[in-house]
Amino acid sequence: MNHKWLVLVSVLLLAGLVLGACAKATPTPAPVQTEAPAMGETQEASEAPEAPEATEAPAAAKEVILTIGFTESQTGKYNVSSGRQAKGLRLWMDQVNAAGGIKLSDGTVVKFKAVSYDDESSKDRVQELYTRLATEDNADFLISPYSSGLTAAAAIIAEQYGKVMLTTGAASDSTYKQGYTQVFQIYTPASRYLTGATDLLMDLDPAVKKVAFVYENSKFSTAVVEAAKAYTESKGYEVVLFEGYDKDTTDFGPFINKIQESGAEAVLGGGHFQDGSTFARQMYEKQVPVKFIALLVAPPEPDFAQLGDAAVGIVGPSQWEAEASYSPEAAKAAGIAWFGPTSEEFVKAYRAAYNDEEPSYHSAGGYAAGLVLQKAILDADSVDPAKVKAALENMDLMIFFGHIKFDTSEEAHGLQVGHEMVYVQWQKSGDTLQKVIVWPKDAATAEPLYPIH
Image (cartoon, rainbow, N blue to C red; front, top):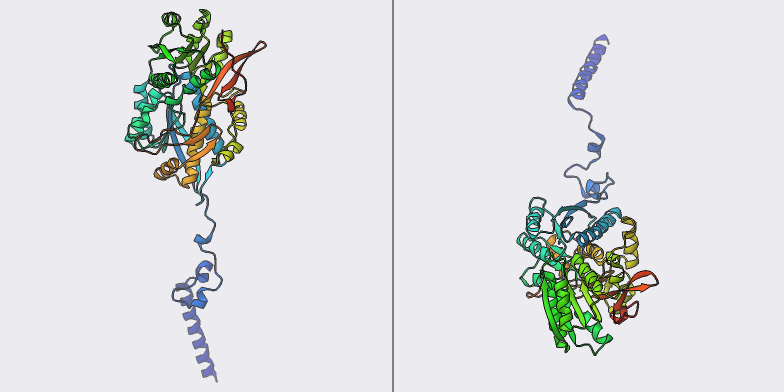
């Protein structure tokens, strides 16, 4: 018996040693590992409940920050209009980012950052800076500088580096007739800038026959008045003076003398804010007996009112006015889509952002450029520049700025073909100057003041 007991104890001790050795050599597997299906298991086993795989968890939204590159004329002759344009663009960008960005169908959230420089109102600086934006800063999309001349310089760079550029503050037709494919215009082209002023004059006084053109020798102004001259002559008017002045002109006396000597009954022309304001003031001081004056750029600006009585009666084409009848209802009536805020909403936001400053059409143009880019990204459902470009080419919609549609022909790719001008005039109400819309009739908020003297 004792012998059998000893044998049993020995066996048990040996088994214990073996088990102890096995325990040290094989660690306890982690719970996740033991719960994961083994390779080669049956179909039934693989369909058993298991921990969710990583691919089944809701994917976190991917945020993409696009760089918008542009220049602003913080100094030089374009600083007023360019500054307003940049304010409008920045307001759009701030609003989109504050609202959480643009949401694409794959969950991507698109936000924006701006990279901008002072172009000093100089073409040479524009070419240098847009090259930097396209290469060193690697901007995803570009917005043009202000003015047709500076935009023409920027367009060369945009095309060279294949960067989609929305142009605003630039109305010259010629930029879009160079065979470019990357440039898209927001403004009504220069060729249609002053034609409405001629239509207004015809409606006011069919007896007027003699018209003078006095204009700034700039790419934009020359393009406008050449088209307006041809249109005016086609309507039976006699152009008795057609003369340009240098961009730095401050004494318009010689030109005013020629206007008086020509017997002109109406004067069309101008250039930009500074020269246009000075010309209007000197015309008033000399009490030139013309019945109608229409000038580019300056009259729609709120600061034009600082001329006081010299501003009264002056007509100017505007790309946008808050009172113009662009609305979701107007879009529906026209059979096209509406996108973005109303004019009232834009004005309210702009004033809140910039110390109660009233937006000009330059401000609205800057905002509109951003808004059109936003819609193109949404329509493309992508930030791929090629897809965004295709969306721009297919665009046909109305925003608070007006109808937006681009020419897609080889001859004039990117030229704006949807948008139309409105014409404003400064009038006196008691001791207060008011800017009113006088043309076209379906957009007018007041009867035109005529003649101005």
